[in-house]
Each structure stands twice: as C-alpha cells, then as structure tokens.
Length: 158
Image 1 (cartoon, one colour):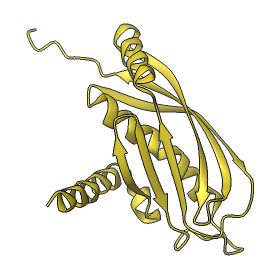
Image 2 (tube, one colour):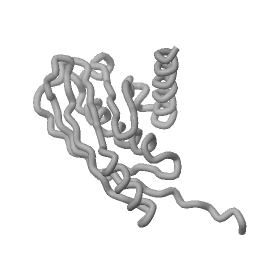
Image 3 (cartoon, one colour):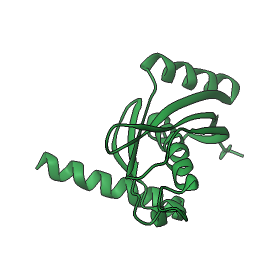
Image 4 (cartoon, helix red, strand yellow):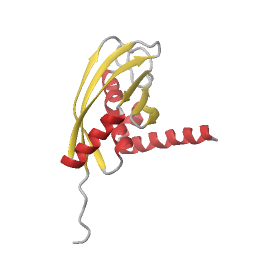
C-alpha cells in the first residue's frame, strides 16, 4: 500500500510541474525522489536528441534548472516562490543515455534561507549538481543561483 501511495505522489507531483511548466512534460522530465532538502530527477534521451543523436544541451539545461524551483516550493511552501537568477553549465562529454541529477540542501541551509526570506523578503541561494548518465559518468556540471522570495500578504481587513 505504501508503495502505491508513493507512486501516486510522484505521478501527481510530475503532473503539477507539467501543468505549471508544459515544456517539462514535452521533454519528459521527471522528479523520481523528493524529501526535505533533497531532489532527484531524470530526463530521457529519447525525444531529447540533437542532430548527432546525443542529448540536446537545452534538455540538459532543463534537467539542471527545474529542480531548484521544485525543491524550493517543496521545502518552503506556497508562501514563497523561487526565481532563477543565473545558471551555468559545463558540458564535459556527450550524453548518449538518459540522465539523472541530484540536489541537496542541509537543514541549516534551509533554515538560513527561510529566515532571511522572512526577514528581508528574499534570500539568494545556490545549488550545484552533476548530471550523470546511466553508466555513472558525469557528463555535465551545473551551478544555479536562485532567489527565494516571500509572497506578499494582502491586507484583507481594509
């Protein structure tokens, strides 16, 4: 039963992401594991090939970029929203298979980000990752610079 619930959760999560950003559905990006401070995602080679039959660089960029926003929303909730400020990719070798990426933030990092966003209305944070092929090779490295912003609250008493 637990396995079924977990599978349903990921199906629902990926549908919500696809609804918010339809481009990820077309590329078949998927979150395969998420918990506080951690996210693992994949993207298939099929449907994301370039003119030399390797993974298109834009698909690799998507795999490195989307998780930061998803993770921020999961960890901090709907009272905040993430903004990508900059993302750099270093492509190390041709990607000839499906790819996986993992991101993490420590509890201390998450608490610092939340506290500063509450205090100042925003907080900058960075996430780095390796894009890994099915043989375990690092085919690219990413460094994303994000900003978590506190959603303004409306005065309903007015």
